[in-house]
Image (cartoon, rainbow, N blue to C red; front, top):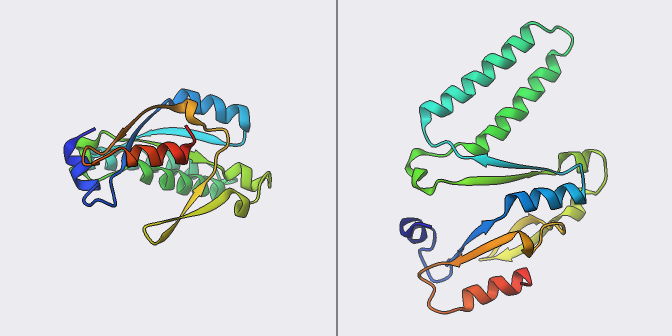
Length: 171
């Protein structure tokens, strides 16, 4: 909750925004109860370029050593490295955003799709916002019990922003 962030992300009256405080443990518990095939990761963000490079180098060294010492599963090792690097990119951000002190929640539904527990066309929904269709996944196991606090933009002139969020989330 930083005035600079509100100013950057809510530049006009149509982009007022929300700051949500979530109970991650509650979300993890509900997801586990809903399906063992869904994984939730709480990912810290790394802003320092030197630290980002160190993390990548450690991963490359680890997987290179696994690869060179294993002739049988080399393709699988390369695939797993690619998956790890793909995941890592979610945790890297430019240093100019360091003041955000951000964590990201990453929900992986890969096993759900692979095991055909639910087709991707039923999971992915679209919502029209500001002239764009935004994809999202409706997670029935995540409800308002996981929401600890909602803070609306300090630039909001009335309670319409909070009321619209409450209606959307059916608080």
